[in-house]
Length: 141
Length: 342
Image: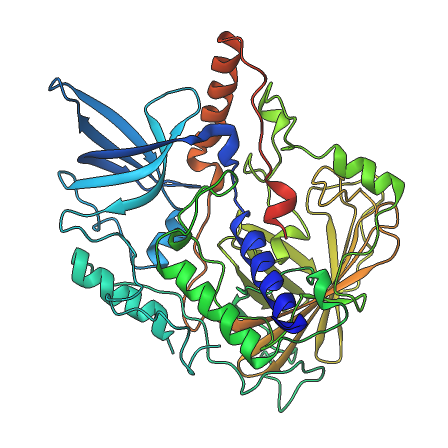
C-alpha cells in the first residue's frame, strides 16, 4: 500500500469517528451500549416533541402481559426534512425496534433501527431501494 | 433544486409508508470545481435601503471537519478521488442503517442531518488559519478550563448543573451555533435599516445586531451569547461579539472570547462566513474558519424548542440516582460537548 493510500485510509477513519461522535445528548449517561434490545410491539403513540421524539410501544411478554416501552427517536426537524411526518407512524402499527436499554433497567431505549411490518427498515435507502449507493450525482454539491 | 438523494429517500418513504408532502431540505448544486473565492463576483443584491442583501435561510451542512487531520499537514484540499470517496461514504451513512452503535452516538445516522458534501468543494478543514487547519495550542489556563468543562466522563450527575448548557437546552452557545453539527445546520438572516438579525436554528437563538455605530455595552454587562455590534465593510457584514459571560466553555473559552464574523455574498448561490475566534486566555493565537453556505431555496427555518420536553435530563438524573441506590459507582456522564462541536 502506498504512503498516500495509507494516509487516506487513516483520513477516512478519522472523518468517520469525528462525525459519529457528535450528539446533542449523552448516550452514555442514559443508555447502556451493552444492553441491546429488540422490541416487537404495537405503536401506542409517537410524541413529536423537542429535542427528541419518543415512540410509545406496547410489547407483549411471553406470559401474555404487556409492557409499555418508550423509545427515543430523532429530532422532529430532521425527521420532517427526511420525509417522516406525524402521519408516518400510526397507532396500532406493528413494528420492531432495535436499540439500547436504559442503564437503570427502565423500560426505555434509544432507538437504533425501526423495522416495519413488511420487513423494510425505516430510511434504509441504500441498495435495492432506489437511493444512491455509490455517492452523490453530479447535481449535488 | 432538491438533491437527488433526499428526493429518492422521500420516494422510498412514500412508497413504504404512504407519506405525502415530504419536505426534504435541499442541498444546492455546487459551483463547478468549487475552489475558495475571496471576492464577490457580479452584482450583490441590495435591500431597498441600499445595503447588501444577505437575507434568507442558509444551509451550512458539510462533512469537512473543523480541524484538519494531522496526517494532511498543510494540504488544504482533497483530491478528486478523496472527495468522491468521502462523499460516497457520507451518503451511505445517511441513507443506510447504522454501521455501528457505540456510546456517544445516540441516533441512527439516518436520523441526523450533518450533510454529505466536502466544504467548498475540496476543503480538508473548515479552519483556514493557522495554515495547519487546526485550533492553535492551548495556554495552561485553556487546558485547565477544558478539564473543567461539564459532561466529562467523570461527571457524577449530582444535578442538572453537571450537564452542559447545550444538553440543558439553555443555549447552543457561540461559536458553537455558527459551526456545523449533527443537525439543524441552518441560519436565517433578516435585515432592516440599521439592524441585522441572525437566527440560529440550533436551539433557535436570535442575535439582534445594531449596525448604527452605537457603543457596545459596558464590560460589566455579560450574556450567554455576548453583545454584538455590526458594520459594513464594502459588501461584507462585519459582526463583532464580546461581553460573553464565560459559562459556555467552548473548548475552554472564557468571558474574554471575541468573535469576528464576516458575511459576504459571493454569488447568487453562496454566502460565505469567515469567523475569527480569539480568546488569549485559552489559545495562543486567534484562528479563522471559512464556512460557505447555500440557500435552502424556500425552506423555512424550523423552530427547535429544545427545552420543550427535554426528557433526557430527567432520565439521566434518574439513572444516576438509581445507580447510587444500587451502590454502583457514579454514573459516567459520557462525552458530549467538545466532540459534537468538532
